[in-house]
Length: 240
Ligand code: FPP
Image 1 (cartoon, rainbow, N blue to C red):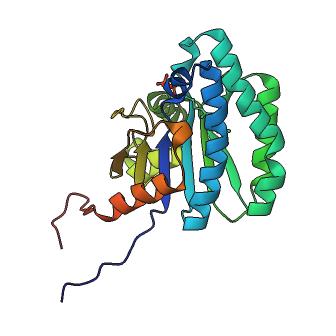
Image 2 (spheres, rainbow, N blue to C red):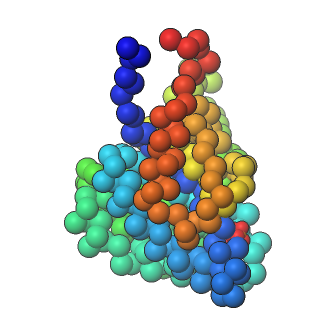
């Protein structure tokens, strides 16, 4: 009889939520309506991921490149994030969610930075699912900031260059302390990393679906986890 493999739930799932604009256009709605629906879907998927036993969920909400979009769209996205940061605490408390924002928040409006700091602080003791939201995030910018921080320590003599390991670099990134993603999902037919978690995704399984993000649901998440279960993760070694 063939050996039955154990069903594995990825500990960390990362998502590039693509297709909000196309979803809205198809319905004759403004792009911002797609983002608003997308924000609702994020909250539902966070609960679904938690119920499935996923321990960390990281979503790409706003990239370092997204500033080049029309001002009205940038403003609408920032307002969605602002609303989330200001209203999510009761649900996070109820569901034991720990929120962390990754990316360079120093470029965000002061009140949004304050709201982010407040939600992170209020949820930092929670022990359930870790919810990372990438805002003004770019992997190259994250690595640049990490290199600057390490170089500063080397220059002031608190870090010897020869002692730098891969772990030193992981610990200098915004995701310090969070295990690397096991599975990356990107929606709406695009098959690119788009400057998302490039260090952390080195060994992740990649899953692409044609569904637009506002149509993504629990069944789609289950499909992605099923596909993950059909992959043979080898980390450069041989199949056992
Ligand atoms: C990509 O679709 C989506 C974004 C750039 C924004 C994603 C942000 C959210 C869903 C809101 C997040 C909210 C919370 C609370 C975390 P697109 O606009 O590039 O779509 P298109 O490719 O069809 O134009």
